[in-house]
Image 1: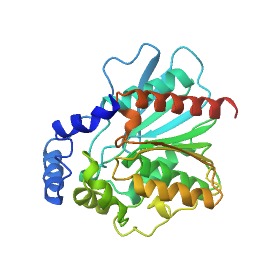
Image 2: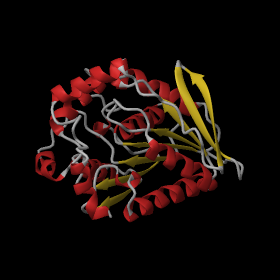
Image 3: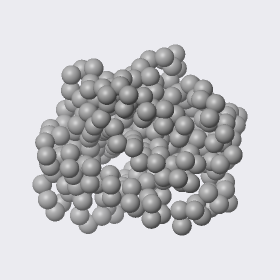
Amino acid sequence: MGRLMPGIMRLRRSNKNHRTRDRVQSYLDYRVRNPEPSDPPRQPQKDVSISESAEHGWRVFTVSPTGAEAHGTVVYLHGGGWMNEAVSQHWKLVQQIAAEASVKVILPAYPLVQAGGTAETVVPIVSRISERVEGPLVLMGDSAGGTIAMSTSFLLKERGRPADLTVLIAPALDMRMQNPEMDEIQPLDPWLVKKGQLLLTEMWIGENGNDPILNPFLGNTRGAGKILVFSGTRDLLNPDTRIFVRNAITAGGDVDYYEQDGHLHVYPLLPTPEGKQARNAIVNAVRRTTETR
């Protein structure tokens, strides 16, 4: 199944909203007129409950296990290119984590770029949400959410309250997207397109492209707690991820890296055997982190 995913993605035209800057802008304009709902599933899994609160003007959802006492908290930042709300794959993953690792999972519906969301405005609020949780803290995000998770991790480190674990699933790490190896990967990636992605990264980072917190590729992982990273080799973001991991290890960061050959962007969220293995690895890492703190 994993090897069939590129063909499936091409048939679905999964990159249709990313192919050019004009297409991205057209999609953003459409979303301004037709906002996506940020609602959770109507029927959660039987072993979790989902509650909602309002914090800093955001809708913030908390997924809690019903079969055991929670002994830690995950703050999950969903992906979607900073222009899409959480989808069913995100909700399935956070429910699995809550139930199987016995933790609370907080999922903020942060403002997207078409609503004025930027790194400068979103990351500090995610940090405040993270600072108020009790017990061990795990930051987690996929794709654009991985950017927010790592930026938050750096900001918390700077404030003297580093996360216990940061999990990055196919993260977008360098908003400048200058790595020439991306051009070599581009023909292999049926999902992300650099031309369109650049508009989104520019909108997200604004004038802060050289900020080592808001542009996490430039940050120093030493002292930021343990970091777990997942990436597939047919992902436009893979070259930057490799460099980030290498630099992190050189700097003395505590990093584990899972790379899946021939697999796509956010492969841990996809319905493949490799995706399932990655999800299980994530649950186990969260469980180990929260049970031993």
